[in-house]
Image (tube, rainbow, N blue to C red):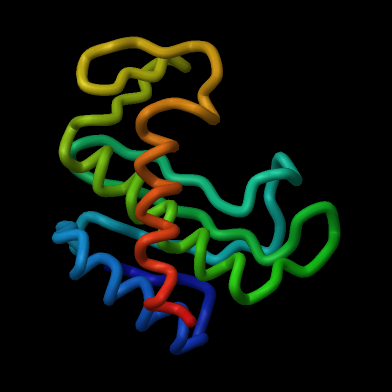
Length: 129
């Protein structure tokens, strides 16, 4: 796993511990800590496929600094998405989201991949507290 744009050992250790817990192929993941979200509303984003996953974690939203705990939750959440991509469970092609072969276009915040990421985010929160 390559971790870019941070020397924060807490974030680096958390990412490595979560990846190990999830059994992720770490050599296929890049995590970049960005100054601010391009959409200004997301704490993080993950894109990928069965070969790689690129994660962005944002330090500012709407010009305001993101709290440390939220950055930690985002690291966990986006690593869950990385695992989903690498396992081929989540596929995004041409703006179409597919989960286990079923296409989704509405209510993406309540999609199975988001619900799984949120559940694991809560389950693993002790790793950063």
